[in-house]
Length: 279
Length: 279
Image 1 (spheres, rainbow over the protein chains, first blue to last red):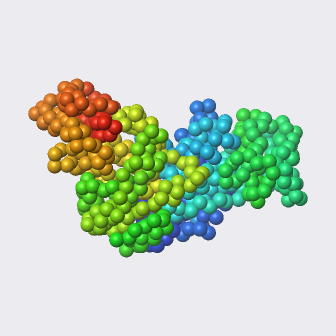
Image 2 (image 1 turned 30 degrees about the vertical axis):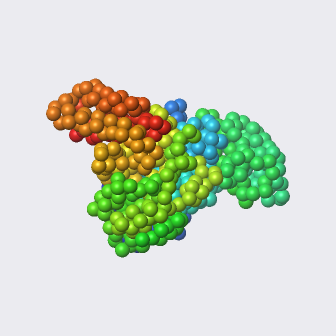
């Protein structure tokens, strides 16, 4: 497995692979890899010949009061996870490499980014779109895999790729959960045991709403209420509970097209997100 | 010569050329091609095996009170110019093809874009950066050629390519002038004969300032004054006369690094730009 710390290192590999007729799959991550990330690598193998995982805690997607400095990092463990999942190269740049002191160009999706996480994290998706553009251009990837866990992010990236005619395919991968139901996230490690227990109210609410949907419920308020009440029972502090059109991310009242039920809630100081695609 | 009207048409050509080991050069234009554009094609041939010219009057770089509707168009003549200069393919899309009704992703350079033309044309460079990103991604070009005539545009695009790690090289091509000195522009056709004569005050001022620079003058005010007074003599309405650092586009007082003397002025209703790289 190659560890690339510069743009030139990655490009040399990618260019050589393309010359051999191989396709390249990228899995962009912020590291501290868990089974959710590993599932993205496994899915990437189904869509491309060579797999690059980027490990980069991207400063431009964190707000001034967010957890950039304390975001968990463990590169040795990340390497082991990548190795175990047949990854061909890790791109592991420094912030200085990615952002020149006079860096001044941003990619901004200004419709889907406004709602949900965009409301409480105003610069977040601009940072995500910008860093993903850079990673796509550096890796020359033919496919990039994003988890449905970060549903809004995945749908924004898919829109960005369409709008800017980026020459790659976006694959959305299923959300992966802990055995007890909690959606996997690097941020779960912030939770105390007691907070973790209470946070299960999110996935319980998601499952209950999904069951009601499968039984025929199409009213958005009814499904949102199930999720809201479950999180409240777990004493989570709700940031949002929304039910939206998958394409526009605009709220819908009645489900008559592919939809997304999504939420964000705090347990202690930790903000967790979860969702289910209703389609 | 291929005329491509869809993204798929261009991609099929580009992908085939890359498979043959050929490099691709792009010359992005808004059509109504003149000898200035032709010189960009000739220069592109020196840097790439296959040349694509895009002909697209990009609506997103025109402000609400600008000349989008009356911008000159003549595709038959454009074809003839491209044919005569050995162009391999023209990309000639519609606005509908380039911008979906729910288009929502923008590329924005927010430092170099603030000054000069950015002050009187607030959305202009966002439109330019966005459409160039799209054209680079569609054409899969290895090289793109921009004229120094649009100096600020060329320097912003160069910054964008650096910041977003776009996998291509930007070549800056010399400004081309009419026999009488006027910088070539598709907009020159708007000028009456009398306005055209008065507009020569711009190039006269540029030449005079350049001569003084070559004689050793390094004071920005002195050089700007020469250009300003010349345009005033021609009764042009000055938008700006600036002398800047080529990298930052920040004004400098004394020329001790690569600099750019640039101006924009109206003659009648027509806004003209001109410049000289002092280096």
